[in-house]
Length: 312
Ligand code: CP
Image (cartoon, rainbow, N blue to C red; front, side, top):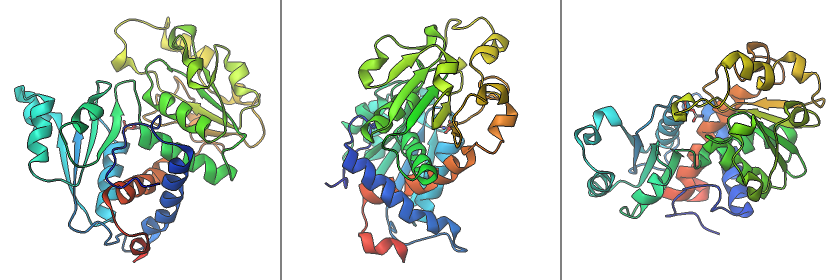
């Protein structure tokens, strides 16, 4: 099994062994971020371009930090500073960036399939940092790493993903990831936010919040993605919160030792109450910490470097 030179377009295209490799490599990189000098020379001389056509706080920053902690040169391009705002096509953008010989391009875009399309014009690895409602593979990897760290293993866990499933690339990547790793995945949300046929991805679907919370080892709450909604999928934020928001009362039905994840950004008081988001079961900031290690592992495995080098 070798990931070097490959693209990371989604979790769907990875097998369990590849996911295990990414997670164990990320685990080994965690200590770099605890050092006083947070840098290893592994990717010295490599150039990584972060091409973000959508806003991002966590993903963009942690891809940049990951590249810098590995001594790669990181270049950030956002839509407002690129010639996309002057009408340049994605194909032309890809061909021009490729002509500068980068070693990896990380891309986020509102349209599903953009990273795959770019990869056809580029000879370096392309990493999907979130494309429309399709996939967000690095998010699912950091979620799996966080769960594995807290629970010891993923196999046999009951994982409930609750909220705006229909618009969520995080949900899709996590359904693929957690089922491949042997967890039992349930997705829950208002019927209007549960895509028809979602069970074909290997999960169970329910519109009962209570059912999703009861017995779950892991609860992942999702943000309502208003930016992807051209029509109303629920009567009001207050109504949504009453039925599908996770608060301390609903959490009373959860299994002992449950952990709460959220990919961020959080809509406090809508899908999750501040008391739960900041409470003792929340691992939300662990997810963010693990995001850097996961992205270091992605660069390491896709772009290069010998295994022995990375602890220098
Ligand atoms: N989880 C996530 O993708 O967050 P950002 O949109 O801030 O990158």
